[in-house]
Image (tube, rainbow, N blue to C red):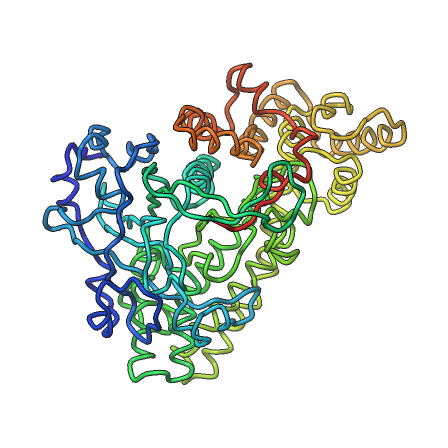
Length: 562
């Protein structure tokens, strides 16, 4: 039963800081003042750091659904302590809350390859949370949550940057997290969004209506802080950092720190399915299998809803198996297997390559675990067997996803291949096509709403009608009741609304002018993505991307400046 948190004192009393109390802080942090300058962090699981508050914070929005889920009374939004805390000021929080947050280090692997060069010290010891600071951990309604400010200022991992997030990217992340949750896909969640008109930062961006792939100008943007919340923020990259240190014997406690972070991860994310009394090796195998199960399901579901992560490095891969880090993400408009919203992402992180990217991250994850079982060749082989099963498991899950999107009982590769080729040839809108298909049409007419090209071509018409005939025969529907039931099921798989970039741009542009109505309107619409909504909303958002937006920088593709 939900227990309501009616005031800030009651919220403070839910505090339970397992990460900082059960793990080790950086032993050198006491020699570095406020810990806000780039430096190497050689050991420890976190660095204590005080967030940098934004000046005179302005409330934009909060997640109504998540407040309700956590049992938070909306009156909290009027309390000064609440506003201060979630805009980066911890100086006066009541006990047992802590007046400092924590930032964590992690390693970087891109598509399974270890990188050290992005670290300013070329050692990998300066890579981590450059502007994300966890500030609170609590048990609410019998579930543990960690609250993290994005854009809360510099940490030792900032690599010379300013530690801020801008309003544009913060609006995107705030809306995207709750949309993803409403789509039924595991994700970090959004709590609040604050901005300030008294602090701006410079960011590279594009000229108006530019087709450039690279940012062309520096623009001044208002800062913002969004609070993202998760069961934990432990990433594959974090385990990798400790795995690398243990593998290379970088310090006397390296193996111990790896074991501690792995056991803490199990406690935070897998305690319901991994018995705490098992020996370490058995825990490692169970962790690998269960993370594999979650990660393969996650990526299959990304493809189901047309989501592309854009930058699926190991440090953007949560070991809890949920979507993490909405930077260069995008929801696909016109179907293109190689869709990639981020100009710096490359084809290896494109829409249909996400299963392979996930497999590479899983490989990095398994490598990080190996020092814990290195004494037994049999155990190493057992872990490698789990690792090698990844491609087969994800392929099976993706085939099931495609079957469910098409309303058929079993995946049919011939039907699927024909469909993909037709979708590419006709240039269909991914979301609209599958939603219209969910009405189970007999001919092409109903699907034309999703076509970007003219469908008058008789050859294409003939191909579509033949495909629809084959598809309908596989459905094997014998009555109107069966048709209605199947249509209903398909509409729970194929969303009506997805958060495309052309929908987001007006929301953050209006927010930059102090008008937050569109942000809140989109929160309402995008947290009901499978529902039929008003005709006005349908005409506005259940529609193809306007031709004038194709190729436009900041709409069709984005840089990672946030």
